[in-house]
Every structure is written in structure tokens, then in C-alpha cells.
Length: 215
Length: 224
Image (cartoon, rainbow over all chains, first blue to last red):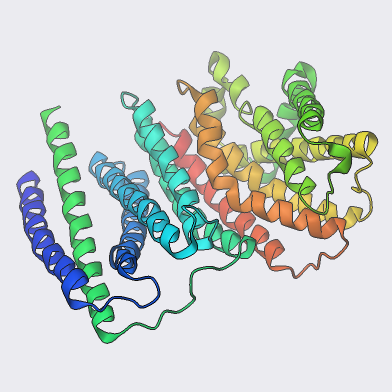
């Protein structure tokens, strides 16, 4: 089992290197420079995929948390933890890349803009998940607490999203018209980031399962 | 035993216990009063308009004071293995959760009445201009707050550092509820709250989903 996870981790890592090199090449040499924002717009090709990938990873954590509570198998908890942790990494990527873009586009590092604010709240929810994992590292009850948090945290995301949208003004454009090269680059970047997240997920599970088997 | 009968029995036991001990209720209500006075020295509360930013301040106090009460809702069962005895009883665990949820719900209603009366008394806040609308908002918020608060409290039972962890886990989850509560209170003070308001629908959906999910998850939380 561990070997097959390691095998998948290596396969996804190699794929992640290949696809990310291709995506970066396309971002810098293939896509045209956006007229209004200039070079800084190129953050978009990684900012948006990071946002989508973080949701995907939080969904992985949600599903495995339910599986853990139902089946009581520690292996499901490892997947749930890994999903939340990788998801948190990508949320941080969104929260770092967003303000860099924002500084150029809106002249301020932070604007209480709905999508960015949504990610800030989701970051707070999943950071509290990480805290309970850190605080309760030695506690047998921690996986259960974390699973419940992952489930209610994920169910809370649509509410956070709606509340933030109704609360604040919309600065992000509702729909973006992209040149064909831009669309293709965004698609390749999305695939590359998803593959990268899967490689991180498999490595994270591999490390934890090795510890579990040693115990 | 009948599900509703169990809910009523556990609910009555807790209410009697809270009224006898008083420490939990009194400390929460005192904290609300203290916050109101402290807020007055940071922002002039007499100039705070509840139809604007004042609503948010009011809900902030309710959430902080409510936390003191709700995070201790399982504290008395932690002592002397009372909770284990409760779990050994051949009753539906969801009934125990619902009873605890109801105790928190009732306490929050008391806290809100206390705070609204005080803010009217001290600052002349316009809380009684549209009592029906404000009551609907408060009750809708209480359901969501009590549902999540009770679940997190049960999660952290016998947990080291639970008093630190409790607000850290609960507050991020309460964000949609808090935003909705502040907005709906502003609208109800202006008497312009429609019962079809999207914020009210959001809050009702929040209540339904989290009350349902929490009562289901409670069983997994307490078994072992």
C-alpha cells in the first residue's frame, strides 16, 4: 500500500515538474501581455488555479473526514489531514498572490474584495483546523475533532462566500474575456497546479502512513 | 424512552442546574454589561447608531458573552463521570444534543433581552422600535450560534486547552451568521426588514444545515 502511494507520488511529482515548466513557459513566452495591467496580470494564471485547487483539496478532506467518522479507519484520517493541509497551502498562495496583483491593479495591498475576503475567512477556518492538529498531536481524540471541523468547515464555505458577496462591493470582474492563448495557458496552468497538489497530497499521505506503519 | 421526553428531561435538568449554580449565567451577563461599559469608553456609545455600525458592536458583545456560557455547557458533565452515565442511558444521543442546544438557545435569548434593555437604558438605543423584526432576527441567529456552539463544546470536552481552542474553532465558522445578524439588525431597526430578505433566507438555511449536521455528528463525537 505504502509503495503504491510512493509510486503515485513520484509519478505525480514528475508530471508536476513537466506540466509546470510548460505552464511557466506559456505564461512568460506564449501569452500576450495584458494591456491595462501589464506583466503583473500574469499572476492570474497561477492565482486562479490555486484558488480552484484549494477547493478541490478541501473537498478531499471533507470526503475522507466523513469516511473516517463512518469507518473509524485511521488511514482515512491521514488522507483528510493531508487534503486540508495541502488545501491550506494553496489558500495561502491565493492570499499572497492576490495582494501582489491588487497592489498593481487597485493601488493597495489589501482591498476588502469579496473573493479575496472569502479566502481570508476560509483560511481562518482551516488554520483553526491546523491548530487543533498541532495542539492535540499526542491526543487520541484529535482526529475525531479535526474530522468534524473539516466537515462543518467545508459546509460553511458556501455561506461564507454568499455573506462576503452581499457584504462587500464587487471589484473582481464577473466574467473575463480572454484571448485564445490566454485561455489555453490558464487551462495548462490549472492542470499543472492540480497535478502539483496531487503530488503533495500523495507525499503527505506517504510520510504519515510510514509513521503509522512504524508505530 | 420517547425522544421528546428525553429532550425535555435533559433540558429541565440543565436549566435547574444552571439556576442553582448561577455562576455560568451570571458571569456571561456580567461580561455583557462590562463589555457595554468598556465599549462606551472606546467609542461614544450614545452616538452609535444601531441602524449602522452599532448593530455589529451589539452582536460582537452577544457572541463574546454567549461564548462564556456555551463553552461551559458540558463542563458540569465532565465532573465525576456524569457524561458517561448520561451516555450509558438507553436514549438517542441526538436528544441529549438537542436538549443542550435548547439550553444555549434559551440562554442567548435571555442575554439578548438583557443587552437590548441595557443599551436602551444607557444609550437610548432604538431597540424597541420594531420588536417583532428584531426578535425574528435574534431567534434565527440563536439557532445557528447554539447549534455550532454546542457541537464545538462537545468536541472539546476533556480536551487540554479547551478554553483557548474554543473561540479559535468557533468564531471563523460563525462569520456568515455574524455578517447576517449585523445586517439584519440594521434593517430591522430601520423597520425595512422584509421576511423574504436574502440575508434572512441565508441565516435560515444556515440554521437548518448546521442544526441537522451537528445533531448527526454529535453521535460520532461522543461515542468511544
